[in-house]
Image (cartoon, rainbow, N blue to C red; front, side):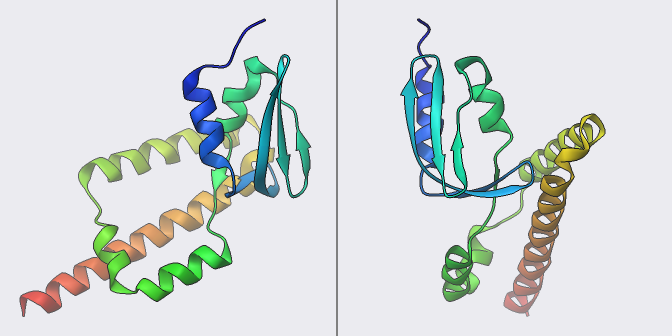
Length: 142
């Protein structure tokens, strides 16, 4: 029987307690269990049981989203988020890569469109943060 890699187990540990979009569903990942040749993933919407050879694809297709609680926590920290969200050349290249990958996924499957819309919304938020960061830097220089 094949065993899951440490990398996959670490990824599974990292998603517990977080909210994601998967296909057209918003899921809160509650727990997982490695069982035979499948991984049982318990969410607030039900169980997912990808086989070992499909678990990496499943994890790759989880789109992290911010819950209302996380959003409120970010609002409470105010400008600290702007400071931490500094946009770099490598993050811009990462965004380009993600967007190109998502364009391919939408072309392959129309089921991916809701996730692509969420990504578009997140990218717009990142752009707004970058604009706010520029404004803060202008104020600090004057």
